[in-house]
Image 1 (cartoon, rainbow, N blue to C red):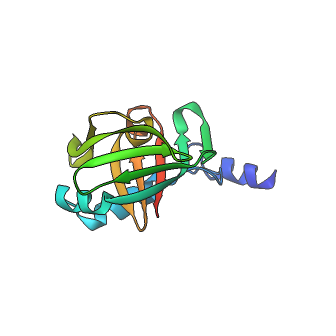
Image 2 (cartoon, rainbow, N blue to C red):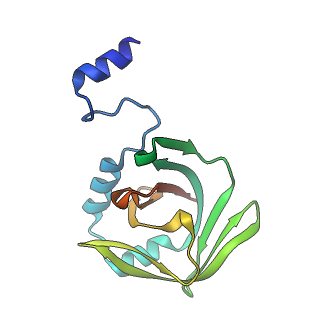
Length: 142
């Protein structure tokens, strides 16, 4: 109760007090500091990634991965999204300009997990769609 009161006292809407919220600002800063171009982004994406969490802030929904979702980006520009080894979608991918100086994916077969701006930080990637009222999905490199 004191924790909630302190959060409200600090500033409504300025500081998030939910421990589970995705700190998108830190991902954004980390990604910007790397000064990535499309070639580097494509290289960093290659490999397999495990879904760890999703934040749908506009809907007030946050969840840690409740399914084993794995995304694999290959050198030949193909990808697959699997759930417990069952393929959900697969196709071709390329880097596209999302907005301003941000990059996202163009895919021949869309996946709800992979929409939005690509933000890298350490061994994680965020597909950031909350800027257009969608959900943000976080993956960890395997």
